[in-house]
Length: 196
Image 1 (tube, rainbow, N blue to C red):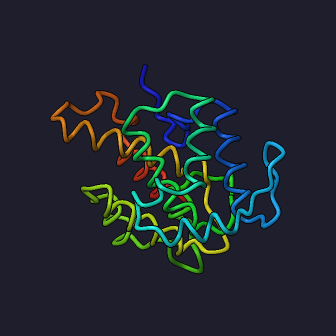
Image 2: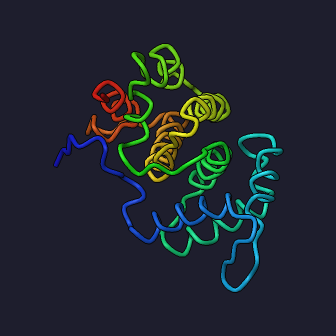
């Protein structure tokens, strides 16, 4: 059955997986974090991840490995999901705050003064990204423009994973989903344009 609720997450549906994402993000701001009775300097993780070449350089970092390990305990990750996770990590290190409402794309369309946070032209560039590297670059710009307003971490991750799965399907010449509301482009456009 078709669901036109474009804000609903499609991949990170388990609350435990969502909790892993938000807790990992919270650790990035904590210099004296504790996890599994182990001290973690989250700020050092963030600095190391920012220095890496996006999106795949982060795969060599402890911060990425920790998130991947914890997510694999909560959900099965396809090989393309590990690349999506690398993009997510590369972008998430530039997010200042987690803002759980509304969805990521709606946050990009929210008005700041009299214009949307992300201009229509920049949003079109983001939507037209054809490879993971340019997609990562456009997302990083969008997240930086949000600034202190923050972004919805779970919605961001969900969109990235959907985009990567669609990209892989295109690379393998597979048909698009029959449900238009499950396609990331349509979901994000709908959310962006309906934002207030």
